[in-house]
Image 1 (cartoon, rainbow, N blue to C red):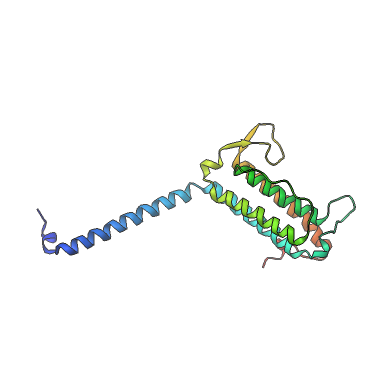
Image 2: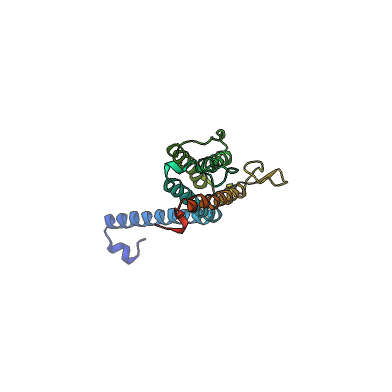
Length: 194
């Protein structure tokens, strides 16, 4: 039996109203699911933010250093800017491929500015893909602790701990390499934000 409001509403309008209600319910459910997914990735999103800061600083640094200074080394005992850049790009690629469960590429030797920027972009894309693919639950899965030092005594550590170690190492290398820029009269990217 129809109540008085339904009795006064033509059948076509009731059908339209029901469709609108169904669309609203579906949209609400999808929005709730998306929010729950985002909320469940708080740890990964926080780590990705830290990664994005150092990732961008390293790329800007590589671009700021002139070609002719890629062979620069502050003293004879330490590596050139090119070797340091190859080290960090190669290490990040190696670690992110490992976290993703992919075959890890051989670490590159010192190469030209153009090739190093391309390698840095490749390693950044690989690491971005890892962060984007992880949920907090997956980030807590244990993998070999031998993936990217320093090596703890335990045989395993979480993917998240491995990624945070990569971020730490990237920041360490960035700070180290800022000296190269300063000695050439170049202000490092983090000291001269755009």
